[in-house]
Length: 297
Image (tube, rainbow, N blue to C red; front, side, top):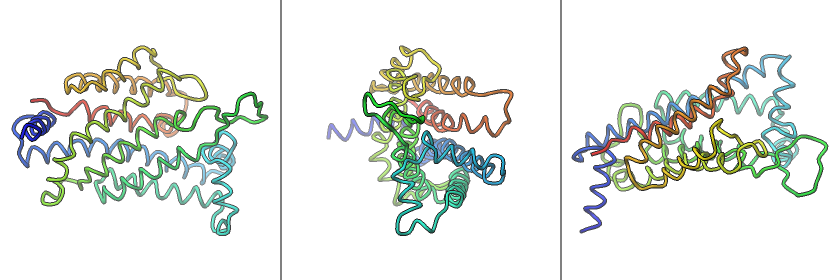
């Protein structure tokens, strides 16, 4: 009985006020909407920059090198699997990137529009996982390489993708469509797991903050353009099981990611390329805002 009252209190604290189906539905929809916009925006920008490279002969070679080169995003193992395996003749580098761009554009627009959220969130999760495990890295000590390659573990270099993968999993569990949720089937399940999903969103922010604080600047790991002590303090604050502490830490984290996006922008370059540079920050800011907007009793 005690556990029941504790769980009910935490649920009311997360949503705000007395728990009802309507207030719960609003809380779920708000959280899911913010995550949909952040993840969907990231995917749309990823797709547009690929299409731009495919349609521009002068940029096509650079794009292939950007994705398939030694310091690209697809390592030798996956390139062999995709292009030289028994069924690799089905793909060429250009057709693979075109297919990936089409999938990203469709999934991103669907997330923003709120269509098939559960399926698209699952696809987003697996795409993000692939981007992490496909990164070409070389971490053997005392080896001098003739080509540029990542020298830090892939999960650390791609820690922002790891954070967004966690957010995509949370969105998959919430799984509301645009403007509604299936109250009969989803409401009871989500009420049971809402607190654990809130905790997963917290750790989606903790990981990039702590990694940047400890390893920022080494092996292509982002620094987030902020002092290490501030990032570490925010990561520590987000581990505190207090709604008010998490709220304020999330707002500050949102400002850190927003400042980092401004720091990365080259004002002399075109708009689309600048959006591509800060595309990951769409997801990180959305996670921060989703946490910060969770109501209190």
